Length: 256
Ligand SMILES: Nc1ncnc2c1ncn2[C@@H]1O[C@H](COP(=O)(O)OP(=O)(O)OP(=O)(O)O)[C@@H](O)[C@H]1O
Ligand SMILES: [Mg+2]
Picture (cartoon, protein in one colour):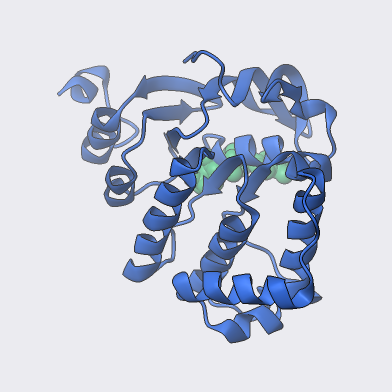
């Protein structure tokens, strides 16, 4: 899958955890304002791709390349990637006890703003925009004053990822099963925010197992990852075919 002048360009990425090959050869391009849906059976390597692009230290890149707007992501630390505009939401967002949500998000936002040459937001201005975004996402304002994700329900954690996404306005957003555990209003908020970001030129990679969300997102491309390799590339037809026949389908079923 190659695109002229993609914002994100990944080539032949091979990734190990310990001595186990997880990604064997992954290539993909994502242009500004376009959306790629990544599907694949449990354990096929989808989260590994996101966490590798984010710079998670457990994932060792053995070979291959990843560039964001021509800049070598793999040569950057995780915080440098975030400052360059990479945002990866966690499939299972962790707790950060003792760190207040509003301070955490404001620090991240001001680091990104500094990298963009913008003035930092003071506590008042930040809270004004954070409250507005939280309200739009259906996240109670009280969540801003609590430690990050501590005691949050599954759906609240996912909405908190959405809040960060809405405030950080990344250049590349990699959303790992952001819809899982969310109620119907939460899923609607995902679709709305994704469409808003896309219109502003954010490149998106969205992992999901659910056809309903995938159809609502109107992706440009659907990829199927299988055992660390991109096995199929298509559009909504591919997502519908997977929903109908599963991942262990025979080639004849896949064409049906
Ligand atoms: N620390 C680790 N040690 C060994 N294997 C690991 C480790 N972390 C991940 N893996 C393996 O890497 C493979 C890919 O995992 P990954 O989380 O990327 O899958 P996934 O496609 O996101 O699956 P799911 O749909 O269940 O979220 C899995 O087989 C997983 O067990
Ligand atoms: Mg996963």
